[in-house]
Length: 334
Image (cartoon, one colour):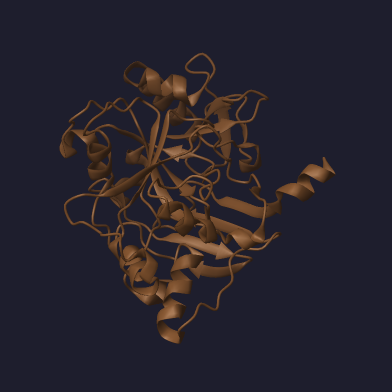
């Protein structure tokens, strides 16, 4: 099934079931008001949502209306946890080769990298990316993310895989020119990682069919920057770790609560002809080839679109479609 949270004037929005083709939607009233409520009671609620989904897909729900992704919030507008990993070795190796200052980081074969981001202010798929200064190095990062149920501390990888409730896309916006300064303090990201954006719908793994294997989505991630194709790396290729590994790693010393979001990190493939899922990776390639980067970071007014299509060419999660806006200009206009 496919689930979306639509704007209703509240912080957590209103949960809706969306048809497989993303054509129609229907509120989940009487089942669960919010996605977090559904996740908290997943064992008793999921089957009722699934039944509504089946009826919606058959066209048998009177009152169903056209689904508009512009009305969508993030599936979880605020979450108990947003932990982002970095599982694609080609991305790490490329960045490490291009930027000596990052060589102090090590991609370990037996331990995934993960950091805890801000989870209190998630962006919907068409919400503006608010930036203070273009000089910060505004970059998009196309990712896949999962939402978990409750995960017990010391959960095994096999058990962690069973805790995945929903899958979605993410744009983990980065301010590249601030990252190294923050990492140099030895305390991790903060100001360099503004609000993250998510796809219009989150889907259960079974909706992905054969594309969901080994706790990963085996489909290309399509990125378009200002109307120009930028990258199409396959999210199932080149990952040193799976979502099951990331979840188990995050739960080594703590429990994870239902509604925790885990990200894959920037999707990246070794083959250069598939492009990239972030500007920094292209700049790394340019620095290696020419001695310096040539592609600028995003400017105010730029637009990024991130989407994933199934084998038949139909959108799976809907598209993240955002523009970069000056925070100060928007504040003045308001």
